[in-house]
Length: 529
Image (tube, rainbow, N blue to C red; front, top):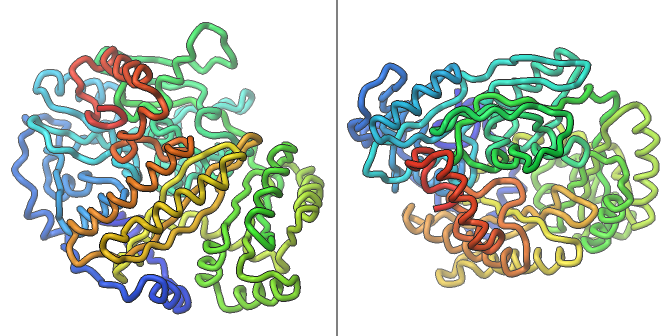
């Protein structure tokens, strides 16, 4: 069963090695394990529903707790402690576009607001229930999860928007196809959520982000149904798919989507390479990206993240890597690159070309090939570490951006410095480290993880997170980075959106929202105020 107050299946736990725990304690000091509330205790705090009765609505307290928040760090604090929780008045599980239309009619008649809810994996507040003078209904779309149609000749498929990534891939692979969209939340996030947040998958270099994979969609809006046909190509004015991509539930509720699929790859391999230093490795990654070599993924960890990953690996793997580093004369400033190659059998030949470019920049394949294969096997397990670290008394969160190559080094340094100094007022240490997770010919994303200790009180932990998130976000904006490369806007990035869109751009977004939803029924407060 899904955890109600953390990531993933409640039967799965991430185990940190003793070496990793020792490293964290040496960097941050001893953790302070918090005392968490259980589901029954939180359930007792749920007030009576204000929602007018309707056959589609469920006002069960447990359902309302499970739909109160997503997976952001403030969400984790609220669910674990009960601090600052607001609950939906009811939850609905529509199983057809007509049922979604009925919920919109209900909202119009009663003044309720509706929050579209996919997999509940948002890490920036998309599904957070805000205090409201009127009833709030969370619309869980998991019953809109049918595999509706496959055109194997044209290589397109139609799915209900509520289908989760793992289920979608399983259905496609049974027919010899893949969507190839693998965000870290893949097991639980949904097709509709990917579209609404303009998601990026880990292998987007090969398959494309969701904007390239989306061919058409259908939305139910307060103003009516919006159908976006899946044309092969069109020059008929503004592409209305762009209004849906990244719309975060403000314009309508996505009920189905047509996506472009690919045959399952004949060949796929993930390989680990070591470089003596980060700057050298960045140049290698840029060379591969700008040569348009057929990689599916380039994931470069900085030296600190490399050490953290090695501390978390098996003793055998860590020992073998250390021996290899010594043989090459590398010190602890070395860094690890994971390269994915995906495609037809001819991709094997491409891999040799890629290896030569990396070797020309001082990169060496790690013997044994375990780093790449281990990453591939555990690629969706990293979020479980948040649960484990919390229970040890530590916090972990991330910020991410994308900038052009010429500004990458300064941006990474600026973000990490802002985080490192972010809790100086209380004398607490913050440990940041970064990796490049998506690269392009013109630039790259920067994905920064940071660790700090939990405070004795949840309100203080939230204050610390707010300070750190704000400092990192201001550094991103100051260096000209996007405030979100792959996680959307939600609540957490909303204050920084004007720096990217401008005031006229924000007015345009508000105007589109008002066109489709004049009463402000859908997901109020998210994306734009």
